[in-house]
Length: 81
Image (cartoon, rainbow, N blue to C red; front, side):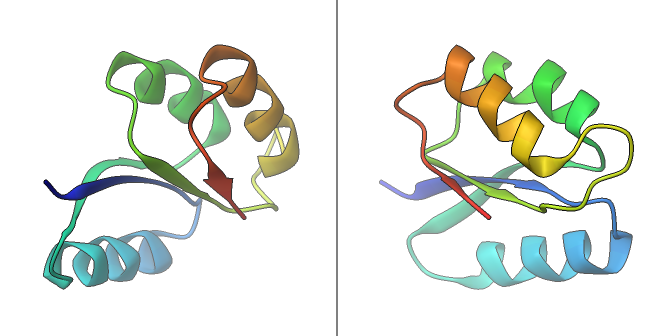
């Protein structure tokens, strides 16, 4: 079973590169790619991944604040920043 990964980053180039890298790595799959904290908080809880890769410096809501909100909703999902 593959490890599912969600990506949260406002930089489209970084999002695309991370997504391609994860999809190309054996045993991993990218299940969600979000461009903002607000999008992540709407989308990620619907289909929780095994791990979230979070950008710290997001516009409007920071990655730190987003992580706190995600951990409240999904306490068992690790977040890497």
